[in-house]
Length: 351
Image 1 (cartoon, rainbow, N blue to C red):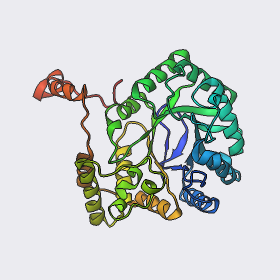
Image 2: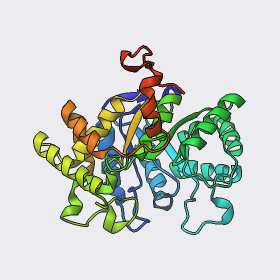
Image 3: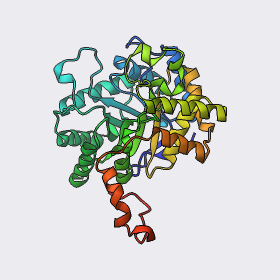
Image 4: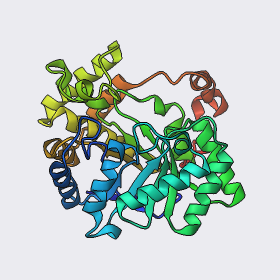
């Protein structure tokens, strides 16, 4: 396991994988029981993993409670991330959802109690609520950082324009900076290449990438069986709904045969290689349901794709970038000086 700082705006050292713990517990009707959850946590830690990601609503709070037990022996060794917005109860009170300062404080105090700790390393605003002003969110976060109850804060599932505005506001007001973003990203979900990931690279934000297997689609298992997230949770999954996704799965399976790795390992190896080429830290969040799946994820650490294999996967999975990128592509050569290339592209991304 390798390590990196989470983005260029923090010194927070994290493992190259984050362990997603949405499957820790069974309150949703699907997931891992406490014993299997403990085995997954221990296996991840023994492999060198230190970055653990949860949320107050995962398994309606059971995930946080289990993690509190697992972390108790050596809390400071781990980088603990949690989230708020949705509430930890199935039918929450109206005042206990959303991103208001009121719910932020309530949610954090409840998470700290379930986790059995007095601080969270990285606190995510889980989703935008389209109601709370960004200034209120940022000022609330700044107060929590000043109090020592959280060390860093970041935005999960926010659009790029809101993240960039938040990062600018925090800098101008001298509030605690926005540390990073959390978004879905995989070979079958690459729309973040349009705005979100270039923004993260330009601003130096860390990027935590969830669902690197496309909800299991990239394992190829749904071609022979519907068992898994698709049948149990019926959410956060992809299907072969278009020709591009079918071509991606075909290519993953072909490269798996070439390398002797599993399709899951090939898919995660591509994300790791994509991360290695980024101008900031991209960290895949792996979300196993059992130790066998976790072992498969860990096996990807030893898979090295050839440049040709990486290119094949990148090309077959690419999505149209749309406006204004495709319009701009037609004039870039002229602006940079034509074939002579008199204007050289900068070494680092520009804002």
